[in-house]
Length: 392
Image (cartoon, rainbow, N blue to C red; front, top):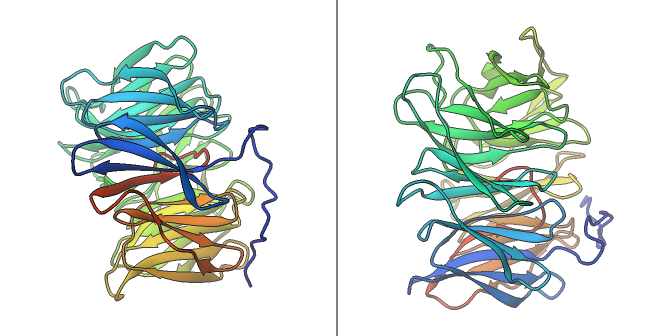
């Protein structure tokens, strides 16, 4: 049975508006923009010119501003969602090619963070003073820098966590203090080599803020103290091996993890934790049937459902799998072109194709006509709607 209702019961954070859907795209003439889609009409109501090449997007917690990075001009631009005008425009990184690939805003909306993959640094923007700071992301090995590519945050946590690729060994995680901007490297032992996918976010945080989960060829849990992250208090759990991305549900502490693209199931834990003595506990573990080719994983606002995009592997087409978190039943929507994905409220899912966006009505279970973004010479890059605790 479909657990969604035609109306959303979510309490909107902003009292003045409801969130739209934002689709970033580039044209073959070398320009970029963000299409603003009204989900009540499924039509584009505005286009925000963003420069050359929009590479990542997010909103702040109250959905008042849209943050867009450009990996060609190497700028972060912040647009007011009242009138779509830029309110902040800052260059990121320290070199001529910082390659910004991810952006997030911590839940108090005081600071924004940009992952500069080509510069081995994170740009921190104080949204009150408009000052910027570039902090290097280094491992505990002398002279070895990491390439940041994904963030995760959560409410009441004093840290922002960043996943990093390492050209000289094991990939790793760093924590950045929200108050002091201090960087802590959470390195692992020499005999543990974790490899992140590099394109999908491998980090998620338990709702109690003490357990940080890193997903990859090896699954690692870090215990995080309130005063500072403790790199040496961690352990591995083999049940998380060969995972790629995932997240905790806040209301019931369930952890959903996608697996490698040659696997046809998701791994699910109930209340997976690690404590200060490196004891790992969980209430339950099981697998949910899925499909080979798992790609993006997203969470509905109410946490009633998750969605996983499926790239075509052993199926004639790809598609979108909706899994209802209450009874673990699922529904599959076949799609021939599958890009990024987002939920709007609890009512619709939107999936990017090459040059269009496909709405799926979760109340009726019907796929709606695709929304053309602007012709055949454009490529849709990212889709977002409301605030997320993970960079996309």
